[in-house]
Length: 212
Image 1 (cartoon, helix red, strand yellow):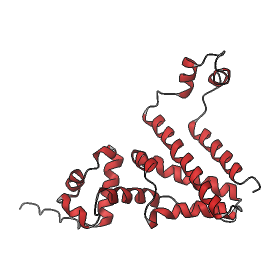
Image 2 (image 1 turned 30 degrees about the horizontal axis):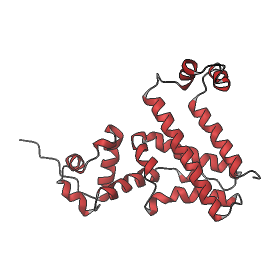
Image 3 (image 1 turned 135 degrees about the horizontal axis):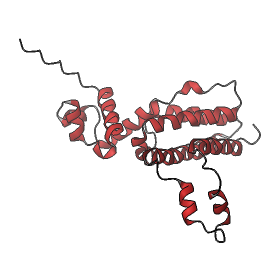
Image 4 (image 1 turned 120 degrees about the vertical axis):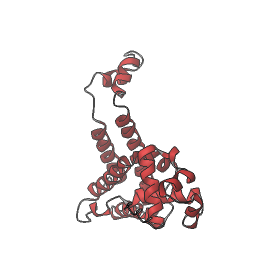
């Protein structure tokens, strides 16, 4: 007796977005087309438009899905504000590296839905707790999140191309006479990118919250 075909999973916004993010994780942003998404879902691509009106809405939903994975529970209001800010930024970076194929999207497309803004609110709230004005807290949040996204892109590239090292580039290009500081750095042991990222986070936190 032939096996019964598996029942088709009902279509939903959540299923569409999960499938889209899985496709990006596996093959990159270029693979995310409505035609390919429909094929992955086993549906006519036009069915997607019932839940997401256009490609822009789909991309916003992918950003939302990535942001929703940030662990907001890492923020402990009983801890010093600088420590809280660094930990919130690290939680953001962890998720970006988990979905590093989506990083180019997050570099150019910020959160545009209420669910995606929740981690942003947490970070701005930490800065407010540190005594910053509302406008400076938002500005500081933008500075910090831009640094996190940028450095996550550097780390992601290093993971994808482990043979490429900044130190090796410096050794090859830096002239001691023309670039004394870079040449000096090239002679030092290679610094782990994650350690450098954490150093930068602490420096930014100290600059934003000098009295904390």
